[in-house]
Image (cartoon, rainbow, N blue to C red; front, side):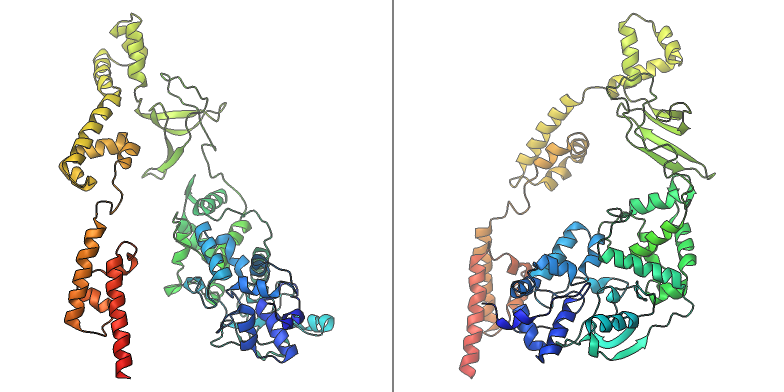
Length: 544
């Protein structure tokens, strides 16, 4: 049942924190913050943090008659989560959103793991506070003023003033912004005000979900392409992270980056190079993304990230026929020791070559510089000519090779271009025989017996080979293991006596502690450990 006192809960102002709404309510009604927080979060103990409060589903349920807002709306409009959301991988984003909506009130969502640290105290803008008092007769805590990396007010450009109210207090407290005690103003000595204002405006845009050219383009590949277009390259098409780091540090300056906590030991920023490396496990702070994006936007586009075009390309192999017009999908850029560059490509027909550019009249046709392999196309073309009645000398002239080399092509092609399906079927039979030799059909045992066969199937028939793997732990007799381990646990308990911790019993018995995660398969072991727990409680009651 909804308590009547929540009917008088004030409606949130624009860009107001949930913490600020509760603080204004406590100030008006003279209610204890801890009592209100426990009621509205439906918990017995709550420490309310200002930036990312958790258990928002309970808040939405209690405030529905007053606000009519869902838990997701509260999360996006009354917390700082929208500032972090665009830069998180989808699994991480869903996990952290679930923690904020349904998790305990003190659950950790990983913000402390960032290099850039969040502000310790709540901050406000003096001009915004004066304007609020004139229009609303009170002021409130704005979300944008609490963002990491925001030093000035995005609207007025004035330095933010710290107060004595903590963003993550050690105990439940709700300090109203109208009665907050001011602390120190953040000094802006030796800092570029224009850059600071630009950073604050971009942080505000991210918080409010304003679209820009970087929407969905925050991967290492996107940043490399943007840097290449702006001339940050050691060769055409090859990005230079070292050059980018050098220019980035010179653009922002050490004082600003130090103030934001983005410089490591000896004034270096190792995280900056990592932003150009494809690593899905590496998560960067939003302010790190914002600074990189703003710097790239400040540079004009002077070059192309693709000196050979965007592709796909036509195949320059004269001996191949393709059903599709542009069979080459990828053309990689390489560099030489003399600091020149070239492209390397491999067509679906097996034609592998290097190129230094494309034709002037046809930008989709690469100009061949050096040929590494024709695949089977030249052999098949020679066989076609032989069946047509041409002599080897005539074929050699057509292919522009000498007759001796033509014989080498024919001999090598007969082996190389042989249909592998017969070999694959034979290899499958041999592999199944090897698996049957082991009673548990383990792949590792069969691989040790015939590693070459395994490598052949792994190369030419990988999907079938993976399907033959026995699921992990499928060969384990869990019922037998349960009986053996439960007897071992009972024997160990008799040796150690009563009142011993379960982890101690497992260690002395020589069992891995992962046994506690496998009780679904080991019911007798679970009963044995529960018996130890009850014996310990009974002993404590007897002593009392």
